[in-house]
Image 1 (cartoon, rainbow, N blue to C red):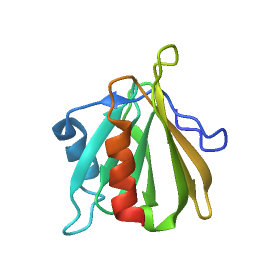
Image 2: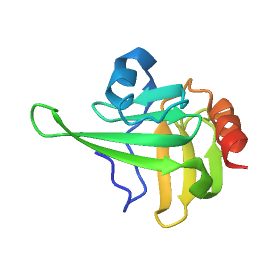
Image 3: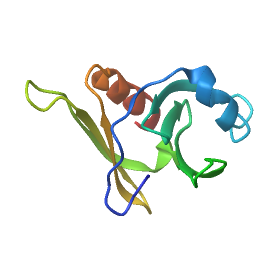
Amino acid sequence: MIDFNNASFAKLGPCDMAEVGSDVSQLMIQGENLLAAFKGIRDYVVFTDKRLIAVNVQGMTGKKRDYTSMPYSKIQSFSVETAGTFDLDAELDLWFSGLGKVRLEFKSGVDIRGLSRLIATHAL
């Protein structure tokens, strides 16, 4: 479950963009492109060229969903922490105007530096 109050999220791993793209495509505006997708157990996050969309799958059946759209233009600062020898997960912290800190934790093997470049390209 996405919990922005505690600035935490389940560990995310890469997923097939086609798997989640059909779900978020109805939210995307004309000309917006899906760049990357990462999935936890049920929840997932997609990065487009305009924003980050966090999807919280709710309920027993998973039919109820909460979509949180966070435009890159509202990012005030961000930080990445790479995986280490004993700490195998990588972290991306984003500070959004009006929302506060959002932390995304990624499984080992995710190109966190590439994700940092993606954020920097669209937020700076």
